Length: 320
Length: 254
Ligand SMILES: Nc1ncnc2c1ncn2[C@@H]1O[C@H](COP(=O)(O)OP(=O)(O)OP(=O)(O)O)[C@@H](O)[C@H]1O
Ligand SMILES: [Mg+2]
Image 1 (cartoon, rainbow over the protein chains, first blue to last red):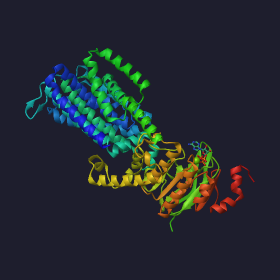
Image 2: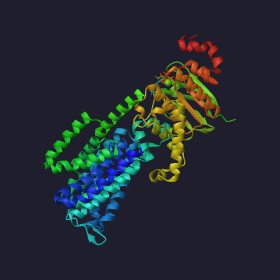
Image 3: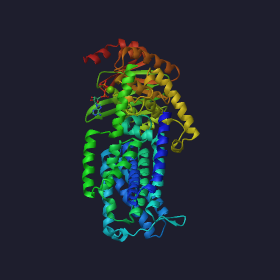
Image 4: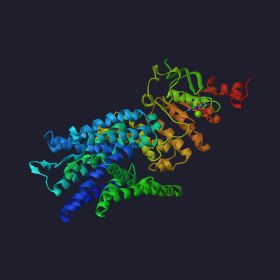
């Protein structure tokens, strides 16, 4: 136990040190890919909290991502606010929306959560495309200005990279604190056996809403950072490609395993870019990976490793 | 004296099948009461209605005089009524220790902020919960599985896990639905002794079981169910001697 914690800490320190160093040895192109990899990894890790730990397959993550992007952009462009308060606003708005959508959805059947969250994402897309007065419709808001920090413009790709990296580390810190706490254990317990949880005095709804709201807030901020990196937000921020990518990261990494999903997120967001697939081909390849992964590794790579560890454990206990 | 649990006129039908048909009984603190009866006689349904896992059609359930019907299952548990399930329920992928900690988590004075920020209060609650978990794990003879996921255990071992999980928060009343079905005979006698010891320490048990030796050795009082009704109730010896009980089991009607 103590040893694996030490390994974890060492791994994190080394990884962060390498990532801090990365822009010094890479082109802007690679650094840009890394920015997206970070925001995607936060979105995937947030999906892992609701789905992997909470057992709720949420398609609303796409809406939260888009709403986060639009909210931050509109706050800066139309209200004249700062990027940072825009991000905070995106987080708060998304948390409120998550509770407003999640609370009634959870009162219905478990499967209805999937439908309701899917509908919410589709509705958000329609609003983005058709409510021209608010969102500028299909053209979106181009020319988003660089955020400023203490009077300095974060204009370069490098500075956005460090912003995105800091956000990644902070978000993963929050998520890690949750999943390793009693709250995370209770979420897993409810997912595995909700009636037993009730018999142990657990009220499921607050736990699930908490997970949903935290994931919504973090996904919204990730979306805000992503659009200010792209310097534009338009309805394509609500493309299904995004949620498909995060779902694959969660499934391949192993739903309900923290580091599995983080590593899958970082690797899978970067790989197709590095291998220079076209966008359409990437969708097809992702789709194929998803099908194969679900068939061959229903618990993800981390789940597969866990099974093997259990098999070994069983063997040693039986030998003893 | 107000009874610890009182059930009056409890009734529940499933699509016309009268699973429970006007059952009344009382329990006092520190008793071990058994419920026996043929398959399908409404024993589990009665427990489900008492613990909020089913909504009764009629009747009244009170714990120390306070009505339970309007409460959700989790609220009834928090009021100090823990139960196990006939078809064993455990958190398969959590370790044995984690299973027991999860059963205890709603019963100490810590809140969500304590949990997120690992306050001293949380660490104190955690370490006393771990100590209690270790005691119960040792008592159940599962010491070597302490850190193993419960999914690797046998059915009988999982029954034990469910039992000691229910004991974790020292509830006021523990309801066990067939605790020794599928458990090996030596272990059954150990469970018997352990439950008796816990009773001496103040615990109260309501136990559904088909294993007659277990019930007859352990219980102060036995309630016999037949076709959704209480057929009779009395000491193990009296129930054993009652001709109607045998008839109910053999399906012979006078
Ligand atoms: N969820 C349900 N839906 C429909 N019918 C049910 C349900 N649960 C129980 N029943 C029916 O209610 C009756 C009583 O069942 P119950 O499980 O309470 O009996 P039991 O005394 O616990 O039996 P056993 O000793 O076999 O566990 C049976 O006829 C059963 O088929
Ligand atoms: Mg039963």
